[in-house]
Length: 455
Ligand code: PLP
Image 1 (cartoon, rainbow, N blue to C red):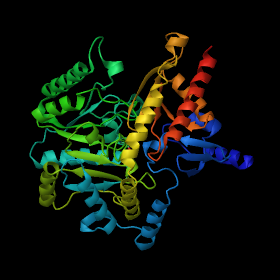
Image 2: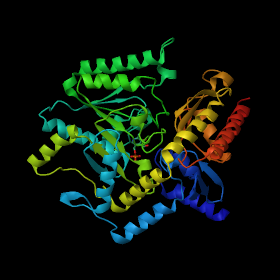
Image 3: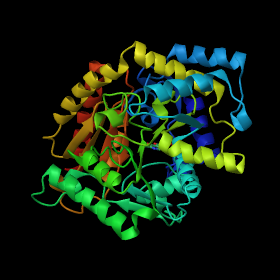
Image 4: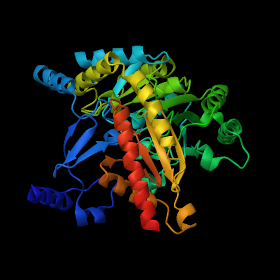
């Protein structure tokens, strides 16, 4: 067993280049190899059990061993393992899923377009918006507004939307025409004495100023995650979305809601747009859509976006964009089954109830000397750490404490992720209160271990 573990790690170091990883560090030690999953847990090759407090990548909503998803995939695999949506072809699972998504959207939507990942979906939306602008004869309407600390993916255009330095540095991103606004992080970005509402007003004014400076006729859309995920779980300040949407409406600028993390219950409502009363023109969906058992993403478009695009495809004779795996029948079948299970088991209400418990329990850590801020909504949260109170300013470089804490947490049996010095918690939506308590207990152990090292 031990030999096998070592061998796989060594082969990982020898043959695999990992995303979001220091490649030199991986050459030294390989990675933690996960072997199997059960409910909210995963097991490594040595048999060590971990609570997957990130649900993989914010995505395995139904946990790691849902037999109905395996059965749905197997059934579809046997019936029609592959077909595509190009050139007026289709298949049942894609149609069923499109109908389900369009009808469950919180605002009127017209069509679903399928892709394989969040990045592909966001890239596709950008191309759709450019195509639409050309269709309308608004050929200057190509700029896209996003926010610092946004995460919308890593392909060339989606990576330009992203506002995280690590995703830009040395990649020559962002491309020109992608404009980033201040992140709506009240604790870090508000001015002394500024209320949450005043902070939101200032950010909306910043948006308005940018639009006027650039020219409203040059702006295609504003992209936003209802709650920013990978940028640090940033919950918008009160009135933020209301004020941002008022500015966009005033200048007739489209709103794209990236629901890749928030969608399907994460914030305690089916969509983050419902939690924050957001009325988007386009929604981007992925991750929990299939509980990530298979890759799939979907774009929902309203009539305002679809109609000019449809005219243009008619004039040209085609929409010259699509992916071999887009709307894959097996992934679509798994997504349909995922949505059925979420509905049948009342998992959105469950996420709201257990989520409130998780927020409350994590808030109980606020007095710990290393904790700077606890934030979140529903079943997504971050605990931001600070070494400064204990070790003094500048003693630890940014991110070092976060990395250390994640390591201690892993040793205590919980997988989290550091975003700088903030630790993220986004467990499978099937988690119960005991599971949450186990995460919080392990976090206490990890923080105390860090504290001891600093003494
Ligand atoms: N959008 C959001 C909000 C995300 O969190 C992510 C991934 O974490 C993406 C887009 C990109 O998705 P993918 O990794 O599937 O390309």
